[in-house]
Length: 155
Image (cartoon, rainbow, N blue to C red; front, side):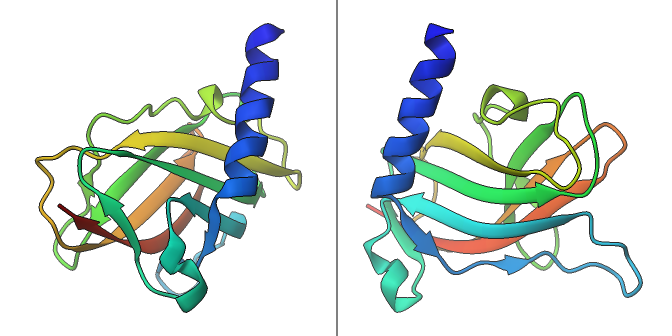
């Protein structure tokens, strides 16, 4: 119970201090059923959000990501992963917790609005540049929530 209380308090702190960022849905082939609605994406730090610019995040520091979503599928378990998206291949973000149930309520219920929150370590070894970040959250049947936003890593 104590752990759940800490998660709720941490989530409230992140939500109140993070900035809402511009995001877009992932691209799917025409006719693909969309299984999820992403309502809002928040990143801390991201002073650039009000100008619709990529979030500037210093390498070697942490970034908090939080988003509100409504899944139109059920799942006793969920996985989540961020990717550096490009036109050739999506490279997984290394070092993040992929068990989404550690940071959102499980089991997920279809049609219920929920919040996912995670803190990501941004390694000093990542190149300083702008990245498209693709975020996926999915159940064992590979029904997913997916969106893209930008960050700009700097020294």
